[in-house]
Length: 174
Image 1 (cartoon, rainbow, N blue to C red):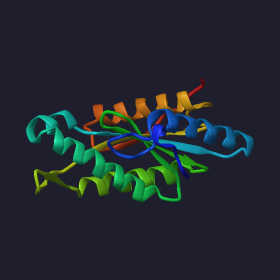
Image 2: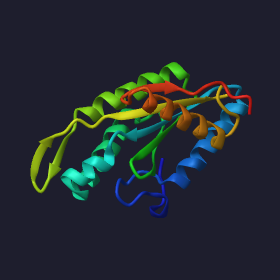
Image 3: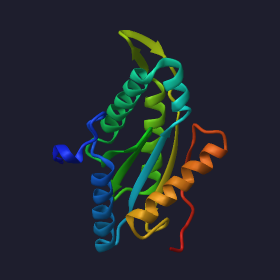
Image 4: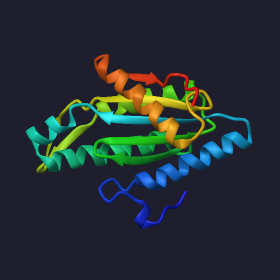
């Protein structure tokens, strides 16, 4: 899929939030039309501000770029990875089941944790943990906004449970 430059995040090269929301809206509309499912994964890098403070913003930017590349590699041909903002990314998985989304989310979490961070030409081994929330249409919401809200709530439940986890959104009646 091709995106215009103004639809891309300047740091990571991923589609930006607005473009991603549009893709999620399209995926939900298609799922409704075909009586199918679609899933969204929302990720947050744990303690990212601490990393920025201890290793510097250049290291933080490198973590974001590397994490984006890992996510994009894992979901190639399965969905669209987008920069949500700050240290958050989201993935739109058209026609994906919750089980498929959970498998992909776990792979993202595991592969991101294996990164080394380049700081001023030196590789530092830093464990990058992510907390992830998953929501799916139609179980967790009927539109893009409600799905992202459910994924965000699931992600925050996981953070409250100790981070480094993946939680599926709760059933929504909205």
